[in-house]
Amino acid sequence: MSRYDVIVVGAGVAGSLVAHRLGHHGRRVLVLEAGAADPGDGAAETPLTRYLAASGLVPGAPLGPRPEAPAPQVNDIVGTDGVPGYRAAGHLRQDGPLPYASGYVRANGGTGNVWTGLAPRMLPEDFDTEAFGYGRRWPLGYADLEPHYRAAEEELGVAGDADEQREHAGLPLPDDYVFPMRPLPPARLDGVLAARLDGRRVKDPVAGHEVELRVVGTPHARNGVPDPRYGGGRGYVPRGRHGRPDPDSRCVGHASCIPHCPSYAKYTPLKTQGRWSAGVTLRDRSVVSRVLVDANGRATGVEYHAADGRVSVAHADVVVLAAHAVENARLLLLSGLAGRSGQVGRNLMDHPVLLTWGLLPEDAGPYRGPGSVSGFEGFRTGPARRLRAPFRVEFGTWGWVWSKGPVDTDVRHFLAGRGLFGADLRKAVGDRIRRQFTLQFEMEQSADPANRVTLHPTARDPLGLPRPLVTYDLDGHVKAGMAAARAVSDQIFGLLGAEDHTDYAPAAAWPGRFEQDGRTYGYRGAGHAAGTHVMGDAAATSVVDAWQRCWDHPGLYAVGCGSMPSVATSNPTLTMAALALRSAERVEADLASRDRPAALATPPTSPASSPTPAPASGPAETAPTRGVPE
Image (cartoon, rainbow, N blue to C red; front, side, top):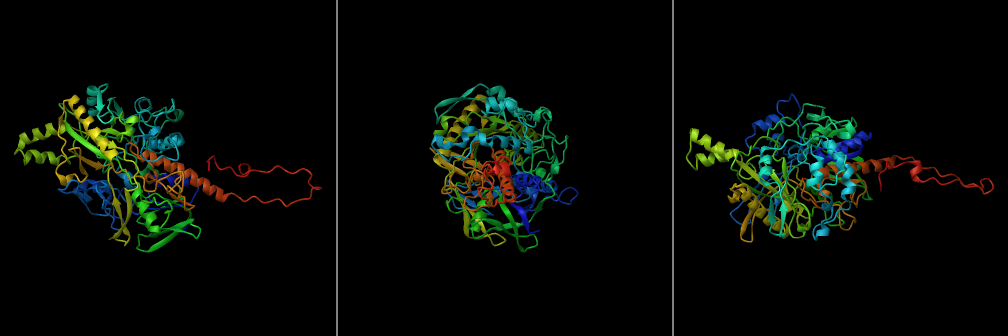
């Protein structure tokens, strides 16, 4: 076939969910994925075997390289002796004052293969930061997205405590709502911090007020114990690899969610793909290079480089771009489309993460489960946002792996730095590792048109296509948030009696490094790219509307985090999934309207033969639109 109802570009979280919903309605859907598909069980080489054999466990290690679809890795960026200073190589080139410090994956399932699995919702006030004097307002609110949040939590199988989220995170969940899964058990670190810190108060030096600390569990898209109350008592059945029902598929604490979950308890798009209908076709190793439109600007299909090396064309009534915020923008720029507002590629956002780390006086229990189970929610909301970026505080339960590297670093510290061997070495390393913990301050970054993705003027990928070029920086609002976060960290460490080992050196390990008011800060990228085809109320100021439809091109959707006008403080995957499901409803309504039989006009009659005119029939009487508003 070369003609479909819908073409979806990208088989990550958003693309897989859109294809699943439309296939369920009987639509013929072609999914084009740039990377390679999972070879599956029984193959000589699988993501698990590649993960076990990898020497460097970067996020893409279990998925294998694909020359035709290169992807940026976090180690493509290296710091220099300058402050700030960095060098960027690889697929994603950079020329900004500070580095965009995140990578992404181009493989079947996308970055959804290697995410942490954290799935909190955004808060109602996050949808309008203009009220706090910065950023952009969404063209929809929390209430508009709430039913789709519930649908996304079912699709992803989210584990959480609704009462806790209502009381301590500020979510207006319905009184009778429960998550599909019961909350994951707290990590040992969570218990230690709760015993020492719950009810204590720390001062926000930027806002000038105190915030009460309370350890709150984070919702996870990860199989645990199903809640029998879910769905009015029908319960929830966990799904294992490739979406098959598997009541025994549960998180068993491998502590390797990134880059790979060997038990397949964490949600990945492969679980959704396992439920696709027969009408959905996946074509991997197919790199889309251009979106096709007709003379009126309506999307008609795509041009792509197929696995056999040929350039092919596929046609459809609707084209959905779901290839990651950077790659969606790159594809629109390559196609010369959606440019009326001048916002394509602009407003690139991430969650710059400030890390602080240290040693507790007691056992922190690291490396026994997901990378983070709980955190502090009290710095996400309120008027303090006017003065500094809000942030969530995640508790890092994998020791110092994100800040200093794997445990090899600790061995080297005592072996080469202290000259310890044998029993003395084992004792020193064991004592150090068991007391390690990290605080991860996930900062909101607002939409700034200067932070953008463009096409590199000279650098080309193996297919001859221009590589993406990123220009990126942190504004004063974010830096003020980092200053507040570091001051909060200092107070928390003091309350815990912990040794603070935070040190953003050597420079090579911290490309995201800057000076602020005489203090050095370093940040990591959270991998939460957003904003590159931002949604809005008007075609003059945004790329897509509230349904993620491109204003300029009927039949063309750009879905994913790239549509988000703000990234707030929550990990964005759940919000992206909710938006994708909402857009799938709109696509189906558009296709249903296309398929609706045309009403035949009744020939005019003379007044004598028809003294009483028949009542007119409105559209809702002839063909319902399935409850989806225009």
